[in-house]
Image 1 (cartoon, rainbow, N blue to C red):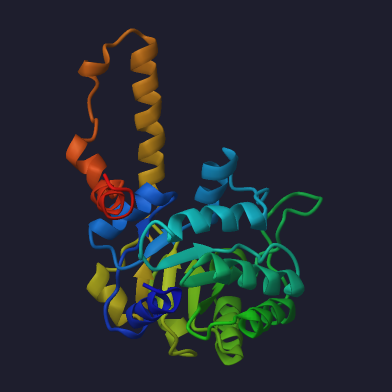
Image 2 (cartoon, rainbow, N blue to C red):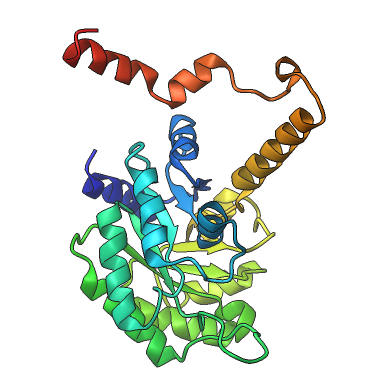
Length: 286
């Protein structure tokens, strides 16, 4: 499946009338698991990228090239449409253009560009936003840079949590008028906030960073939400599993006694062993 086809599949989700939860993925095998389980969309977050690639917290020390390299490993492992968190675009508006070009060539279906002031400047470190004008410039730059018009550009803002509902609504209107394909909001705490946003834009919404479910997927869909993040538990569960397994082995446990090991059949499925075996028979005389 071509990258354009994946992007069109994600656009179909955004243009539909249902709300879906994406599968949080971080490497080729996790993406294949999500795809095999039927997730419509995969999500590769900036925080999880930092943990996966660097073992570092989410403080924007990951580089664009490191991020793009991991995305390539994910997208070539299957056909799951991938939504990625491109943070602030790794710099100013010109850097945003480079980010779009690199991530598009890496195979993403959609990327979020946010208006948070990143990386952290000198000072007290409290979260802050770019001016609306600079945020708008980044959104326009992202749209201008894409080579495939099917690539989804998502305008992302944390204004609800940082500067309040009035600013969030104003940014939603501004970024919508710029032509982004969807809007991503973090810090949503109540349905009224989504209703206020819907009053100024008809764009599909993506939400993250909220413990509220707003009445479930049906209710969120009625509020215009098409993708609702649930967090990134798969990576956290993998960290715990590796830690517990290594600790058990270090403490003297016999390998045969370890719990939660995948079956050989599952490993064959996820590594696509049958496909490799077929290629060996066809091309190597085996």
